[in-house]
Image 1 (cartoon, one colour):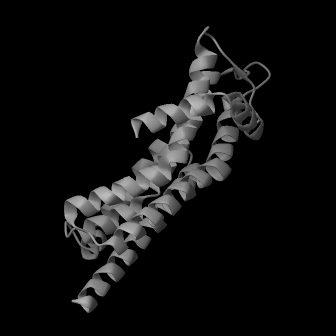
Image 2 (tube, rainbow, N blue to C red):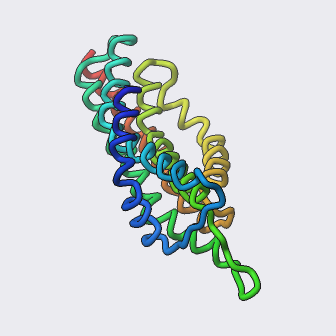
Image 3 (cartoon, rainbow, N blue to C red):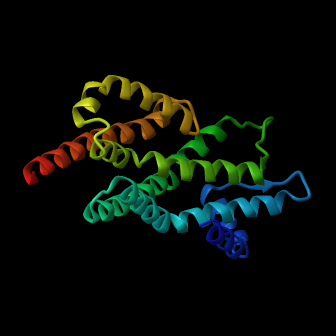
Length: 216
């Protein structure tokens, strides 16, 4: 996996300037750099993020195989785990790309004036966008994480239902940390989908438990 990541990063590096240009035009930002090596490190970061996005199908499959080997899960559950993990991860990344990033960027840069103009460093811009794309992708895996915990009998759907109020508090904290801006509207763009995913996780865990009882 490390060799594949390194190879993809090197391969994507040649296309990184085009990817940066597309991202820069999409978000409407002009970038500058303050160090000799900053352009190279910024392009390497873009290449690394793209490599992770491309590798996610294999990463998801390897994680599913690991769960099967360690906990003896069924092949059907493993296939469902891999497919659901991909759908949720890419849904989170796309949600961030099309909704959260543009809204947050416009909001944050809305404080500029005639006297105060933004100067955005290339490396900071790449780190900012890459962190949120991958972060949203991972956070959207919440229903799958809940289902796996219930499947391994570490807890049940009743546990998640009982502690719903604490989950709402944690979701609010995560939304405040992961969203680019601290305003209520932008936090809601993260918090509401996360809460819906939490409820979906409870529903899926309940259905999984019901199907297991039926089969037994």
